[in-house]
Length: 338
Image 1 (tube, helix red, strand yellow):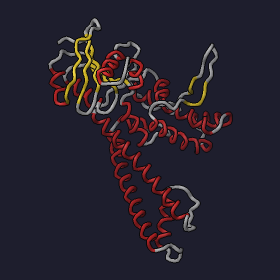
Image 2 (tube, one colour):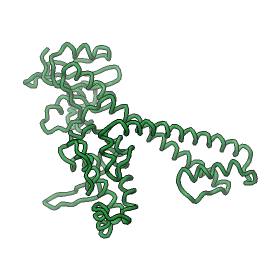
Image 3 (cartoon, helix red, strand yellow):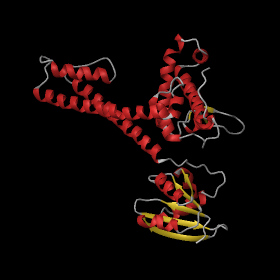
Image 4 (spheres, one colour):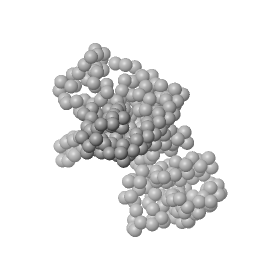
């Protein structure tokens, strides 16, 4: 069977294929079981296979590339306009195939197995951080009911408050409450140990990956930010410019322009929220100490702070760092301060 392009709708066990020839005539509409997938594509001549960038898409993209096919992934929001009628697997596969024919379509870069493994470390770390934060807030709320309050913020302060509540015998805590606090203390320690182990994996990648080392020379980008960026975008060559990369991260102003009048709002906050958050936190840390320095970047930040508030200056620096990241990764350059 000679097919020019295939739209493939993915699922866990049942997959839908919609194939067209070079004249855009439908030549194949077929449902495949999971165990039939590779055999089916192995029998086809190499062609373009288009899929939504959803769960397991990167795995199947790597497998089909091994068989000689060209694979492209499309973000689901760009496929939706091409769905012609009710939602089912056949219509979805047809819409994916149609979306893949558009010359201006934007595609998602296929990730390697190593990239996905490193991203998994970051996702688990992010979840553990959220769980620990929720636990700390819960502990503070419980102890406040017994008049035990710690004005300082942060995990370390909450950990000390918990220790004092357990060790102090005359603070009026009932026995069952003291036992509960011991359990919560052990749970908090478990979160700390998990985070320490995950951060060891991140530090190992930071030591072994030359791209990460180059990124970390830029002030405001540490091991966590650098490894997260490399895991997400690889060499970043899917972006045409640093501005496009910054826009993908949601670090550019949103537009509300019409009738020749340009109106710019707050940042768009589109794209990868995790990466954007890391870059903003890194920029905020740099901003705290810029008044103590006299280098070119600090001079630019200090002048910006005279005209704008700290939040705007923080986002401006995060945007600048995003463009520097793109240049370092896509061009293989070293960071040059100034």
